[in-house]
Length: 286
Ligand code: LIP
Image (cartoon, rainbow, N blue to C red; front, top):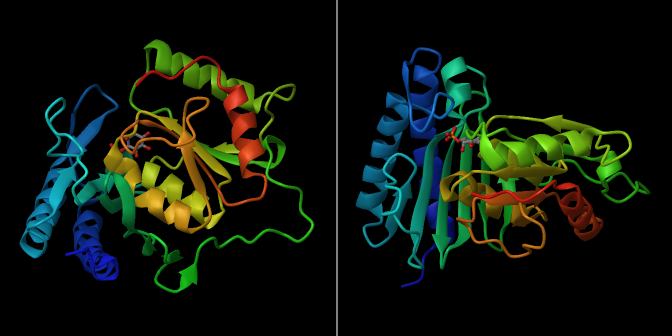
């Protein structure tokens, strides 16, 4: 039996609202633990939300697999071809701890390791982003993405007119820290990339939704996992955007490749991607 994607999206929207109420109730009042280091954080609410979501999905869709950030076991959990829910219970955990209102729940559904349904809900701003493969992407059910439409006669997307989402991520040493720091510096410099600006929303899912909405022109990150990008990926593509690899030349990235460049819909997308890759100083290595 093939999956009813519309019905799955509706189920995920209801679930996201329920989980969102729990996230909102707990923000700013939580203690936290380190995972890998002192900037890779987890709270009891991350685990509680994932447990709630996993139980509801397993009850409603026992035939589908489940992968979640908090139950992931490195080296053991593998993303397979079977239909799979891919869940980040709180994306933007640091924001959640600080009550910075850019955390969300990210609920994705993938078949053959390709995202086909995405639901991302930010309960603080009451923003519900949804996307279904082949059926478009929306904010709050009715506003079709992208929200920002091109101005007639405007120049195509290029570095010089781009607002770019970036994140430091949780690795603050070694080659990845070096590549990110030097690339950010090159992208900012007047005699090099000279992008208009950077934004750092602290959540991969929120960054991807901002690119899908056309509010950010691009988002580059290394270090994310499938649960950070699955839902946002389909929302981005259904808004006319494109996901490529965060390393030069990767036009068709795997969902769990951990290095991504998301670009909004625009005629200048391909030259922009090549120009952006040209600014990457060294190679990310996740
Ligand atoms: C975080 C991201 C953030 C990224 C971090 C991390 P978490 O997810 O969304 O943008 O830079 O590497 O993956 O830990 O808040 O779910």
